[in-house]
Length: 118
Image (cartoon, rainbow, N blue to C red; front, side):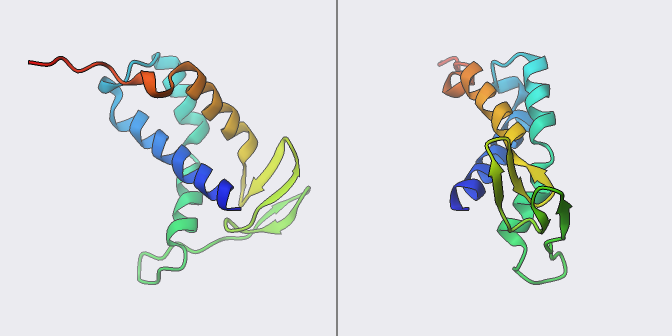
């Protein structure tokens, strides 16, 4: 579970970096958009796992979701019924992992454009 939550947090962070730092990344636009589309839905999952029980008026509470393979579960639960079915809340993490792995293979740490030094 800890690895899955860490993966969700870091994948969502990579999504924000790709979204907000377009000009600073040496990425193909179509690949970047493919990655953003595959990881956009992680925001709600991350918010519940990070802030779901903080309290306050902006509370983000876990919601129940039904999966035929895993039954009823919320965003804080994890069911890994096979390699291709890693369920957390309403999301199957397997396709997200494929997108993250593809971006890591294509760009990795080399995606940052070199900064010109004065």
